[in-house]
Image 1 (cartoon, rainbow, N blue to C red):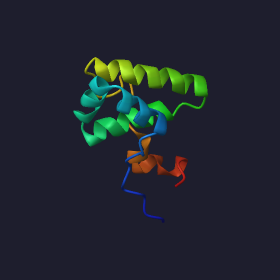
Image 2: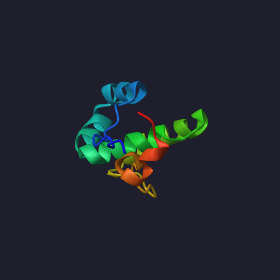
Image 3: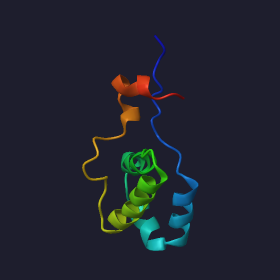
Image 4: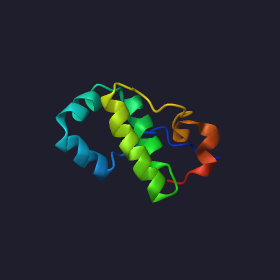
Length: 91
């Protein structure tokens, strides 16, 4: 049995990097999140299958992080962290 990747952190997408660079208030809130919190937002934002849903998640991420939310609401957490879900994701 192959060993699961224990580094579940996602790379920050380029569009999120650009928004963070252009908006100091958002950047300050983002930098105040834990590594796990930032990872949850990135996974939640990038997981949708359609570009339209991803765009909605991206806009909501910006609004909610600015409002002080530390994790996406109603998100069970990054599935990449669960060993039981590893079979659904390829490296």
